[in-house]
Amino acid sequence: MCGNNMSAPLPAIVPAARKATAAVIFLHGLGDTGHSWAEALAGIRTPHVKYICPHAPIMPVTLNMNMAMPSWFDIIGLSPDADEDESGIKQAAENIKALIDQEVKNGIPSHRIVLGGFSQGGALSLYTALTTQQKLAGVVALSCWLPLRSSFPQAAANSCNKDMHVLQCHGEADPLVPLVFGCLTVEKLKSVVNPTNVNFKTYPRMPHSSCPQEMVDIKQFIEKQLPPIN
Image (cartoon, rainbow, N blue to C red; front, side, top):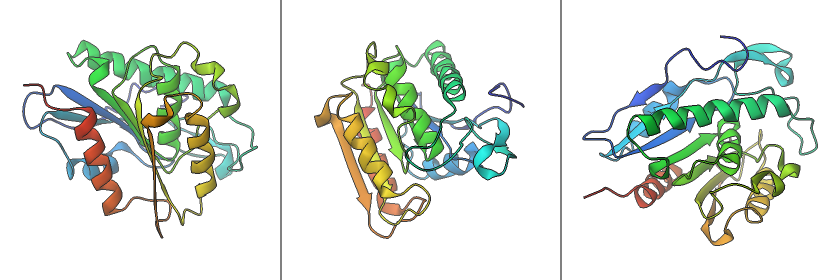
C-alpha cells in the first residue's frame, strides 16, 4: 500500500436497497478511511443508490512531519499559497476516474454517478470532476478547496461537466480549512462551471466536521441529481 496504489483494501460499500440504478462515490478526508463516511451515508441512503467509499493509500504527509497515514496525495501546507503535490493530485484523480469506469462497467452510466468528498477527499472530487471526460451527475464538496486552482479554468477546457450541479458546504467555525478557502473555491468554481448550478451552503458554529443539517442537504441534493428510474 504505497504510493497512489488503490488496489487494496476494497472500498466500503453501502449497497442499494433495491436494484442500483445510480451511485455515489465519496472520498474521505486525511487520516480517515471510507468506513466512517459509509456509516454516515447509510443514514441518509436512497433505495436505488449504491454508495462507494474507497480508502486512500497510506503515505507520508509533509504537513504532518512525514508521518504515514491514509492520504489521497501529499499535503505540504494549508495556506492558500502553499506548494502543492501536482503529480500526486493528478495521479489520484486518474485513480478515481478508474473507479468511475469500473462502475460504468458494472452497469451504472457515469451521468448517474455523483462524486463527493470531505476535506482532502472533497478537494480531489472537485479536481477529478473538472478534469475528467466522464459526464457526472454532480459533485458534493464538503469543507474543502480546489487543488491546483491556478490551473483553472484552462485545466477544465475539455471537461464535459461545465453544466454539472455542485453542492459545496463549509462550517463557519472551521479551524483547519477556514471558511475563506470555501469562499475562494466557490468563486473559482463559478468561473469554470455554470454559476447557477453551484450551491454554496455554510453552517454556523460547525467546525471541520459535518452536522445533521448538512447531511439533510446532501440527501436532498443526491435525490434531486439521481432520481429513480421508473
